[in-house]
Length: 123
Image (cartoon, rainbow, N blue to C red; front, side):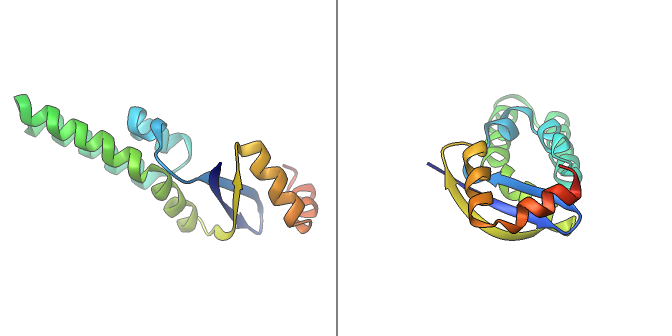
C-alpha cells in the first residue's frame, strides 16, 4: 500500500502526490520536476547538475552525481508538494491505496463534495 497526499485549490481538480522515493526524479531530475510544473526545483536541480559537471573531476564527480541522484529521488515528491503549496494548493487529505486510481476513488468516496467540484472545474 502507498500513501498519497491530496491537495486542493478552489479552481482546480484535486492533485494526488505519492509518498516515498521518486524514481522519476532520481533518473530524470529537472525534466521530471518540469513535467509537474515544479519550476523552482527544476531550476535548482539543473543548476546542481551543471555545477557538478563543471566543478568536479574524476571520482569526486561520480560521488557527487550519485549523491545528487539520491537526493532528488528522496526529496522529489516533497519538492512537488512544496511547489503545489506555492501555487496555493492546500493539503486536505491523506489516502492509502495500491495505485493512484484507487487512491482517487477512495478520496471521492470519503469526500463526496469533490465530485461536484470536479463537475464545475471540468476535469
